[in-house]
Image (cartoon, rainbow, N blue to C red):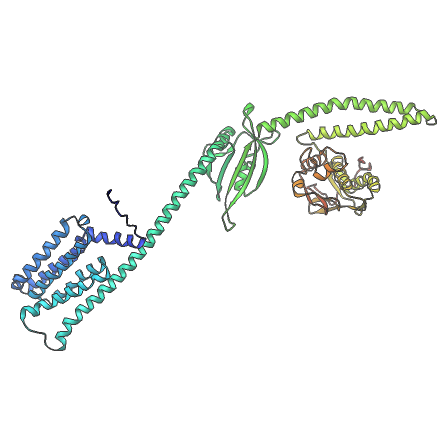
Length: 574
C-alpha cells in the first residue's frame, strides 16, 4: 500500500482568527507571564518592608523560585513549535507559586491572593471555555493551602465565604473574559474577511486598470481624461503625440497648442476655444473637425467632449476623444476640388447653350407652325439646361468651406413674401395649402439673396414631401434680438436616423430615395452653410407620418427703429 496522503484541515475565518490571536499568547507566553511576576515582586517588596522575616520564609522563597522558573521557561522555550496545549502548564504553575507565597505572607499582605486574577485571565483568554475549571481549581488551591498548612478550618460564615466566594467570582470573571475574547475573535474574523475582500478588490482593480491602460496605449484614437477641476489625469500615447504635434503654448500645460486650426486649415483656434479649455468650461462637443500641426505635418482629427458622471448622475470630470481622419479629410477635399473644377468646366458650355437657345428663340416666327414646334422643343432644352445650371450652382456653393454673406438692411418680411410667391404655383399644382403669415415689416441686416435661398429650400422640400391635401405653414417672428423663421408641414416626415444625417452633403432620406422626386441631397447642406455664415442655428423636428418642422434662428442684429429700407424691392428668388 502506498503512503497515505496527509489530511488537509480547512479552517473558517473564526477559527483562523482565534488561532491568530491566541498564537500571540502561545508563541510568546512571556507577555502573559510578566504581569504576574512583576506583581509578585511588588508584593514581596511590600511584605519585606513590613517584616523582612516573612519574605525570607521558605514558602515565599519557594513560590518566588517557581514563578521565576516559569518566567524563564516562558521566555526561553520555542513555544510555537512545542504546541499550544503545553502553554496551559504555565498558568497552573503560577497557581502553585502563588499558593506557596500566599501561605507564607498572606497574613501580612492579604492582597497576595488577588494575584490569582492573572493566571485566571490567562487561561480564560487563551483557551476554550471547558478549560476554565482549571482557574477555579487553582483559585481554590491557593486559598486552601494556608488552611491545610495551619490545620485549622475557617470560623463562621465570614471565613467560609472567603474560601467559597473568591473561586466563584474568579470563575465568573474567567467566563466573562472568555466570552469577550470570543467576541474579539469574531470581530477579527470579520475584519479578516473584509481585508481579504478588499485585497481581492484591489487586485481586480489593478488588473482592470492594467488592461485599460494597455488598451488605451494600443489604440490610435486619442483619449484624455480631466477631473472636475479641469486637470488632466490620464492621456494615452496617441494623445501625447497629438499634443506634441500641436506644440504646447505652456510647457507646464501641454493641453493648449500653438498649431490648432479650424476645418479650413488656416483659421487658428484661440486657446480659450480649444477642446481642453472648452472641457474646463463644461461644454459638450460632438464630432468637430480640427487640424493639428504645422505645414505638411498637419493631421485632421474628429473630436468629441463628453462628461463623466457617477452612478448618482453627478459629474466628476470630462473625457476627450478624437480620431485621426486625415486621409478622409484629404479625400473629401480632393473630391470637392474635383467637383468644383468639373462644375466650372460645365458651367461655361451651359451658359453658351442657353445663350444660343435664346438667340434661336428670338429668330422664330410666332405664326409659323414649324417655328412653334421648334419653340416648344427649345423651351424643353432651356428648362433642362436651367435645371442643370442650378445643380452646378449648388455644387459650387457646396464646395465652399464657408459661404461669404453680404449683409444689408432689408425687409425680411418681403423676402418671405417673395419666397412664398415663388413656391405658390408648385403648391397649387400638388394640392398643398400654404398657411402664410401676416405681412409685417421687419428690417434686419442680412444677406437677402442667401436668406431667400434658405426659404426657397425649406419651402420647396416641404411642398415636395407633403401629399395632396396637406398643409405647409410659415412663421416669422422676433425672439429677443434674434429672428426666428419656421417652416412646418404635415407630410411624410422622417425617421430619427434620417434626421441625424439630414444636413450631410449628398444625403437623401429613405422616403426621398423611394419617391420620384428628383434631387442630389445638397439643398439642406447649403441651407445650413448659409445659416452658419449668419452665425445662426437650424433645428429639425420630424416624425414619420406626422410631418416636419424646420426652425431657423438668426442673430440678425434686429434694429427696432431702423430707417426705411431702400425703394428697390428685395430680390425675388426663383
